[in-house]
Length: 323
Image 1: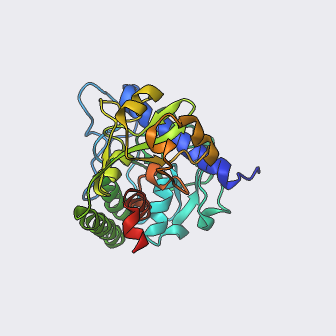
Image 2: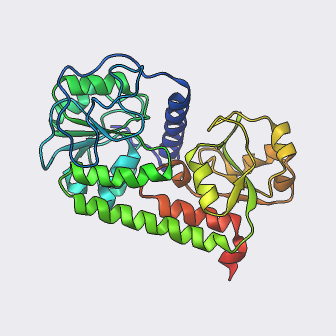
Image 3: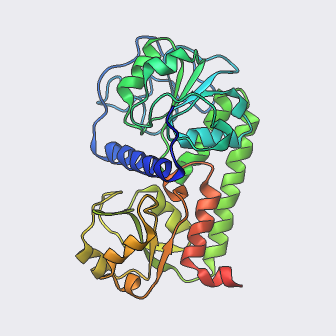
C-alpha cells in the first residue's frame, strides 16, 4: 500500500475539506434512502427520519442522525470516514475500537489500520470487508451515495454534520453516546468548551485585528463568513475582512488589496511558504505581516480546536506570545 507523505496527506485533507464545505453550501442533497427503517436513536442523536423538508431520503443537515439498522449498545468495530471523526474517537480514548479509516488519516495511532478510501469517495466494498458494527460519517462529506449503500448493506451509520464550533461540541457528545461511553463524550465536549471560553477571555482585552485567512493562492481562496475558520477568527479576537455570503470564495487580488487586512493568516499548508509572495500587492504581505500556520488544524473541525485557537490567538496577537 502506498504511504502518503505528511505534505501530501495535509494537502489531501485540506482539498477534501474545501470540497465538502463547497458541496454543502452549493448542492442539494441527492435523493434515495437506506431501505431499513430508522432505528431508535440514543439520547442527543436524531433518527434518520428527522430530515429537512424537500430533501426526501437525505441525511439531516443540522443534527447527528442514524442511517441503516439499529446500532449495538457498545460498538467494537468502528470505521471512520473522516479524519476529524477519527480524531474525536482518539480524543475520547476509544481508539482501540477503530477498525478502518480514510487514506487521509495521519494520526500515529491509526497508522496500521486499513484504509477505506477518501473523505469524498469511501469504498462501500472496503468498508463492508472490515465487518464494522458502526460507521461514522461526516454528513458534509459529499459521499452520500456510498454511505447510503453501506447503510443498505446492513451497517449502522451515524451521520454527523460538523461545520461550526457548536457542531464540534455536539459531535463529541454524539460519538460518545454512539460508542456507549457518553461520559467520555461529555468530558471531551467540556474540555473543548473550556478552551473556547479561555480563548475568548484571552482575546477580550486586546484590540480586534482585521484578518484575511488564505487557504489557497492559485486561485486565491479565502475563509469567508460562515466557514469554520471564520468562527475561530472571531473567537481568537479577529475580524474577518471578507464579506458576502460565501464561506469559501475564490477571491480577487484586487479585492484583497482593497480590504487591506492588518494581518494575513496563511493556512495554505499544501503550498510552499515562499509562494505567498504572489500576494505581495496586499499591503500586509508587503510589510511582512503574514503568519504561516504549521498545519491544517484551522480547517479541521474537531478536537484539534484548542490548538487551532492557540495558533490564531498567537497569529492575531503576537504581543501576547512575546510576554
